[in-house]
Length: 498
Image (cartoon, rainbow, N blue to C red; front, side, top):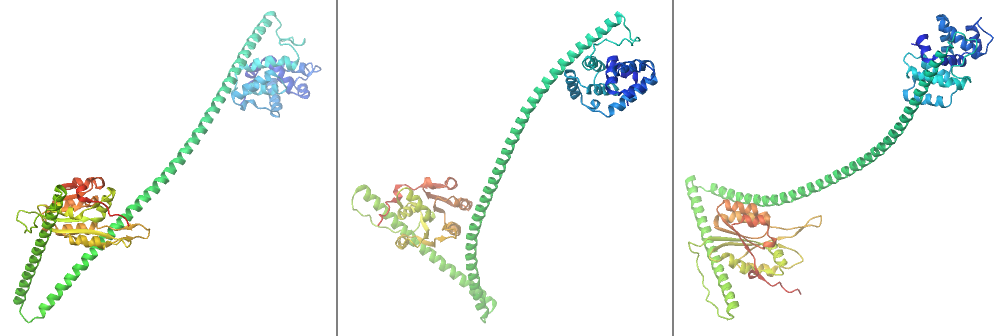
């Protein structure tokens, strides 16, 4: 949709219209439109005449607009489709160096339904360009344009309008310059922001890479921990399974023995009551035998403990007095007020604890100290053997000191790691013997025995732990009723190396 002739003429003004008609219409079109009206003039004169005639004749004005539209359709540019910033830049360039394309730009701006620029700016631009392209001063007219007002008042009004337009143009040029400066500043800021954004993206990418690496490391560590826990659980499960297998085997043997006894009893010709009496008598007899054996074992253990105490007393007396006097050895039977005690020694743990102090444990002095004023029921030493070290003399020494020695070979796994401990067997022995004891003495520093200590205390037993403070687990020391630190009195100098 395009504007009417009146709006078009108001936007361009007489000078702009003269410029557009002179530059866009060819001589043939001019002659056709001004036929019979001063047709012998130049193109510029005919254009001025046509502009004046169109102002009075609406039909001629419509024909003139059609010819101008047809002439401009074939030409470039098309400023009505430009953005305002681009249009102002083109207008400023056109004012600096006017050219034939100025007529096309002015025509399209004046003909547009919604002009991108104000009417005053379009008219001012036309006033400034006319002198450059038509080689005449603003306000000059050919002598044949009698219809144009020539009074002094009209000229002063036109001069005033020209000065206002020039002022407006200078203001627009200043605004355009400031706008260009602001645009350059904004472009510079935009460049800086883009650089900062690029740097932030690189930092973010680096952080993502570091995070992914940390997550991978955490997954690897988690997998290692799970593997270690699984391996430890398998080892524990294997040990417990082996112990249960041995217990199951013994139970089967006992069950087989009982079954054979029952079958033998059933084969007899005596009645059911006779068989019951015989079984009861046999059970009573077995209990009597067991009681006699336990009494004999306790008597022998008490005698051995008494001998050990006497030997310890004699040794202490010799060390203190420097004499060779020897006290007579006494043997005594357990009194009713003496508590029953059982001693369980983790030899491997004590060996390493004493080696850190540059010594070795005196098992005779240890047993004498633990059994003073008590009745020894059972003393067990748990030993791990290796093929490289001959421990037969040490084992014989323990056996002569009232110790029951249990041995186990050191196992080498496929990964070349060593496995050899008595934790499970030592715990089972202590629990199975606890009903015959008042005091349980554990000679170890291993924290794995904390559950055993708590279980024995729930059964009403007093639990004492002998160990080295530096190498004993704190929770084991806290769980026991009393903890005895092994001092120099219970240690001996290490054997000299051959």
